[in-house]
Length: 162
Length: 162
DNA sequence: TATTGTTATACTCTATAACTATA
DNA sequence: TATAGTTATAGAGTATAACAATA
Image 1 (cartoon, rainbow over the protein chains, first blue to last red):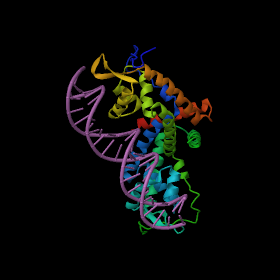
Image 2: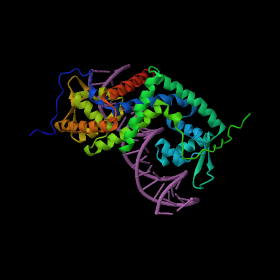
Image 3: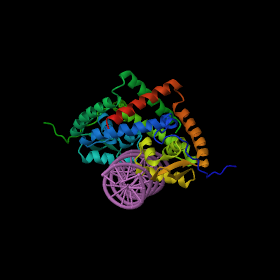
Image 4: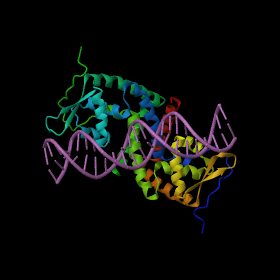
């Protein structure tokens, strides 16, 4: 019986040629690396506007769906309700959105953009589009569509197994 | 001149049909959602083994590259050096790896797997392979290869613009 | 009873500055 | 001087329990 705690010593390979083939073959590992790189790039691009990927996503959803409730927004973005509060606070404090009484349910807040929020949305979408071009510029529109389709298939598989 | 703080009121759409087309057309947003879903699935799968995606990644790199230094490992995984310390501590405390003196540099630690670490690696790779099949099972091997290639192209574009 | 928004809390991942011991 | 590992710390993002107001 072998000793479980015995160290397996290195072979003679030079220390600089590192093999990461086992990891890079796992889609999940690669997706996570790419997500990190893409997120920090888009955050850098949005910073001058006072937004980051998550607050941008919330602003976009509110502009595209004025009157949206926080619970529906949370579900659409796959964010837990409590984690949305601070972001909505932030956008409201900046004067980009308002929390309004929902006419059909006094518990709920109907989230609406202000004119300033609408203007910021226009600028931010442009910024994110040029970020998108930077990240996926070398692939054609067809390839980009294929990539999005495959990612959405993984998303669907992940959700159904959750 | 319009009032910047004026609220734009909702149109007459039913509150339940939420449009997320603006967001879902951004690769970065979709990649980030998918990364979250995939990561929580793989973490759930690895939990019984005492591993997460990140600690699994570190174990794999050490088994595949025995004698690896922490700085090289950090660079290969795109993790900041300080953030690796706790993970290496954790794997060492569990008896899966050891920190050994590097024969060529007394500042450095040569990271090596133990026999227990090698055994865990074998089990964990199997677990992650079945997770992988669950996530990408509906696409063929060719499609999966295309997906990985496209993701790596985005990674390269992101790194060069960083 | 259930749901909406909220507070509090905790855990993971990430990012930076600064220390020590070596090189 | 610069580098390897480390400490301390702070910021995002994420997850859960529980409360008041309302359905």
